[in-house]
Amino acid sequence: MTDSLRHFFSVLIFLTLTLFSNLTLYGQTVPGSIRGRITNAATGEAIAGANVIIDGTQRGTATDTAGFFLLSGLTPGNYRLAISMITYKSYLSDILKVKSGQELLFDVKLVEEISQLDNIVVVASRPVGTDAGLIAQMRDSHLVASGVSGQFISRTQDRDASEVVKRIPGISVIDDKFVIVRGLAQRYNNVWINGAAIPSSEADTRSFSFDIIPSSQIDNMMIIKTPVPELPGDFAGGFVQIRTKILPEKNSLAISYTTGFNTETHFHDFLRNPGSGTDFLGFDNGKRALSSSVPAHLDNSDAQLVDRISKEGFNNDWRVESIRPLLDQKFALAWNHRYKNAQGSDYGIVASLNYSNTHKTLPDLENSRFGIYDNLNDQKVYLYKYTDNQYANDVRLGAMLNLSWLPAPKGKMTSRYEFRNTFNQLGRNRYTTREGYHVASGYYEQRQEEYLYASRTTYTGQFAGTHDLPDTHIDWNTAYSYSNRRQPD
Image (cartoon, rainbow, N blue to C red):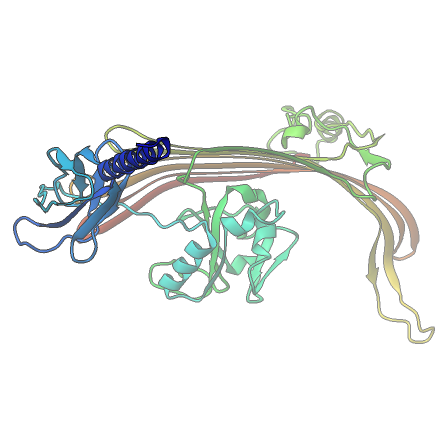
């Protein structure tokens, strides 16, 4: 055999062995698959959406509407399938051997998982501090009512309830504190806070000063304009319902500090009487009070007693000092905390503290009174004409503490207990100068000065509860209110 012929047979044998080796290797690595169907063991119905996972991996699939599944592209080897479906017992298969290039058929019947559930009591509360909650409350009340929510108030710069109530259609405010509903004065309106009546904040008329409630304490405010059986009938204008914040939705702590100025007051001379050491807290410490030597009944015919009381019985500090007031200061702190114990009872705390100290100057105010018009000379006739310069320092101190307890439901009965406290202190130190003339049986030029200090205190405390039974709703409220206005000297 020639060399060329031997070389040819050698190459042919090599190619044949190589081809046979490749074919053998390919045959060993052809992927396999697992196909099957999952049905209900009791009824035989197909189970759609069951999870089929290769145990120990993240690879898997889900059954179609007919209960079939297919896992393809599997490397030959041993596998276990984990099958799960809601309301069915989980299933873990035995070892399944997948061969090269073959499809393994594997059907599974799942058994339903039946368990006895205890009674479920759903307790829900509708937040009325949100815009949607307030609208729902007004819609369900079947009354002619307008309102504003705490969520809306938080988006404004309103400081107190008098500024908030201005945003309700059809409501006017006079003296920055009294509301007028449908054109009727404040004495024709009635005001309740948290479902309880509050006393008048004025000494000579029935009215409520809305400027004593900080806006941060308000959860919602509604004004009802039509009489209904469940409300007192002693109002002709409007029935104002104010609800302060009770149970927080989440835990929070908020601290805010703001400052401001106006060009007429700050950076200019501001006149004042020094006052007492507690004026910055909104009340007088007793400096302006009458002396203990002043009798309850004064005999005007006793000249010596009148003279002594005039000299010794009153605060005789008539000093006037000029200052450059600091910028207006406003501080607010709000703490909300909700706690739930292991027994399922909810506890809530809503606490807030508000403080403001502001100055205001009103210069060159005309204070005049006119007589009968002078037609002959075509001019006004003044009985008096003064020019006032007024300097006022206002201090507000407000605090609120609301505690709530929602015990765990007992069967079908749910209860709620609340202890609400609202305290407000307002103080005003005002000094006014007045210059002009007065015509009364003659012409008199006059210069007058006014020293005014007034403070107001309000407190409302309530202990309330609600109980919901299958066919009965019980709502009770016990309240104590205190209102005080002091104008010493």
